[in-house]
Image (cartoon, rainbow over all chains, first blue to last red; front, side, top):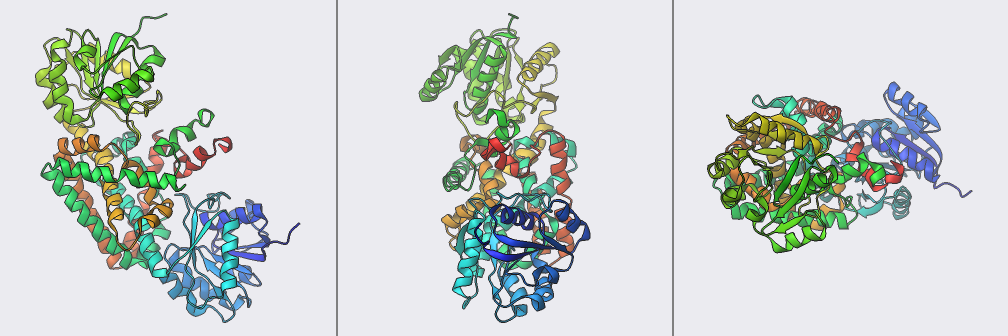
Length: 311
Length: 311
């Protein structure tokens, strides 16, 4: 059997992303040893019941000690504390990476703690579902999805190539990007959609004239689509909002400006403008399907998934 | 063989809803004869190629003539013109219904043309996908979904019961509601979500600092969910905005107010408030799944639909 890509991989945090990594690392034989750490004793016990790793600890230092690759998968607000905690245990030549949805803040938090000789390469796999915790992960999560690396200038090229190789074996495609640009791109493709989804579900929940039961019964007419993103992990999303504030505020300002313009067209009955606004957006979905980033079936394939035998 | 529910059903409009009705009417044997009408000669030809009906015409009067049930499935802005056109052909005792997403406006447009002795019962099946046209329909579309009837006071109870029976045989569950209340409920569960989705896709499409290619590549991080609703039929949605203006403006105002409050929490770094806002919304999705209005699988079941053999 071929030697694994890394002798020891440490997974700090074993939620949706961490546990998906554990599963694909095992399936693809990418590590000689998978060391798992998470702060919560309950979560750690669950990871052990699921057999996700080879060793388990509530102390991130235990897992990181002697690891060739350390992957930090925690809410971005905890990145600095985790880096400070594991820094003394990191071995020279090790690669340290993360999976956080914001990059400038994660770099600012982690970089100061990284010992000389350790290759710190921030990363972000663009993949997920609305579920969280070690039960939510699955090994195909990264299949065909992009993983963005945002190495700081001067990072060892061989280490970057090795991390890129790892993600490709997990099924991902690789891009590298400046951290600030990453944060701007993610603000529009991910952060704004989640914030808008949380907001509209909150607005519906607050209505007096429409009952909660009505919102639920008739949700198939559009509303239910938003409830998926709005069911995402609140801690993760609180941290994203706090740690990518400037880019998010910029995107929110643009969104609100555009919405005011659309609202004005509705108020004044400007059918031509509405038709034009509603026409240009169809092409975007077509491009996403063509790029392999969306299923080519109506309604997200819900009807197929509900009746796989007809698929 | 049992006698069909109606001797002759006329479908005026043969898009997603009309063609789904044609298919389920055929499968369930609900009509002795299915008469199809649509203004577009191309669409009519396609409906005939698909074998959706028993007779075909570009003249709605031809189809409606002698029908026991006439179902108008056109953009709501065309309801009045269609009613005026078919009125002289409607036979006494016939049921006339529609499937429009707004009800007060449709009643105002159609009611004045309805001849004495014809039972006009406005309706709205809460079902759909982002696709349109006669190829987009499928017979299971209404399965488990609600159909809302908004009969005006004084409508013949037997006719209402007969129409309800028809929709139930199509797979639907029935609710009846006041038209104004319907329009308020749909403004939040359907109209606002579509408008917001169109808007965010437009905002992303306009950015200078983020390329279209980036938006598409990384769309799996949230954005792609919105592109589904934003790929819906522009004519239909232009008409909805023009014909449910007051309720939509009210919901837009509430949404924007809530978004400003959320934006302020982001600007001032109010993590507790963000956490609270992001926590309450999870329960809504759970209720929708429990009510059978959403698939109980992560990510809308995309992973299952993409690999039905693993389902």
